[in-house]
Amino acid sequence: ILAVAGVIGSVVAILGLNTWKRQLYGQSEYDLAKRLLKSLYLFREVINNTRHHFMPYSSAPDLPQDKLEQLSKEEKEWHERAQAWEKRWEPVAKARADLDTNVLESEVFWGNGIKDRMAELSRLQAELLVAIEQHLEKTYPRNPDDTDRRDNLKENWAIMYARNDRSKDAFQDRMLTAIEKSESILKPYIRKG
Image (cartoon, rainbow, N blue to C red; front, side, top):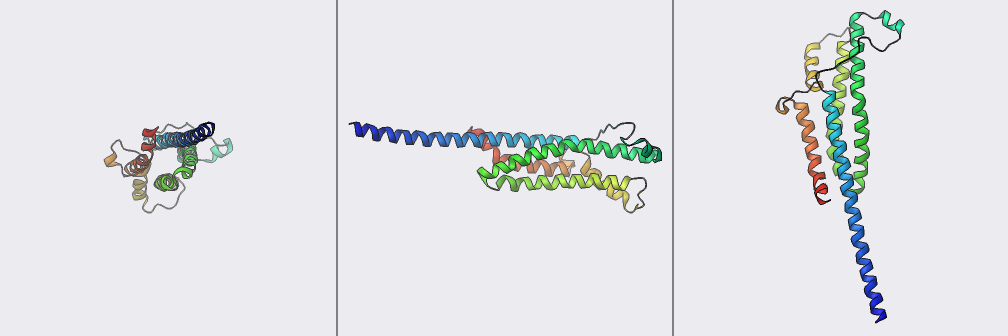
């Protein structure tokens, strides 16, 4: 009888341990999916804030006084705008770092599925940064290259500045579509938890 009780006790312990491991793994997936969605939504919001039409900036650029004295009024305004764009971009870089950390951790559980879905967000982030840089380059007062300036500015504005209607904002539509694809993978883990 003692031997049977020992065997039964061992079987119950093994089954309990396996159940505990499955529960722990499921909880870890739930926590990661939740963190990943939160960082994904934060990234979406900082991109939206970066693309907002209203952009306050200081009355004078943050430059040494001797440099300020050498600049024309237009150049000072350009530096003000450039610094405003830099300040707008800071939260994007921070949110992206948090998102990348969670994406890296997701590879442990789910392989490259999430990472592959996030590639489009990386492309969109790069596209936005390039549009801002090209815009600043083209609008610099001492820039001698004025060829196709208006067309290029118009293309960049379509990326740089959000519209309230997704159907009229191709950049926003592509970003939200990429986010929705990631959501479709992550939300089932949240529902399990």
